[in-house]
Length: 40
Image (cartoon, rainbow, N blue to C red; front, side):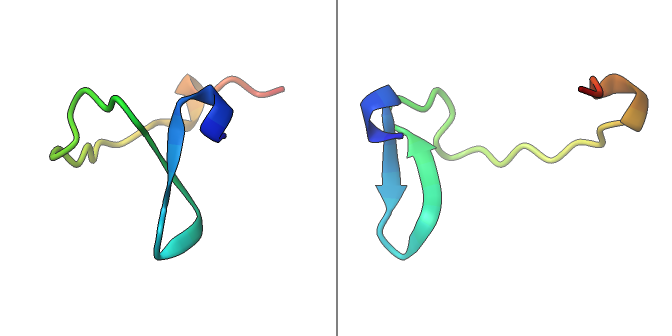
């Protein structure tokens, strides 16, 4: 993950954040319908 431009969150080993995040102080919360997700 770090080689792809992400940095780990020190308090959560599983949580990574994009280093050059465009909106670092914005929390995006919007509904996603099942039909908009591609099933593989």
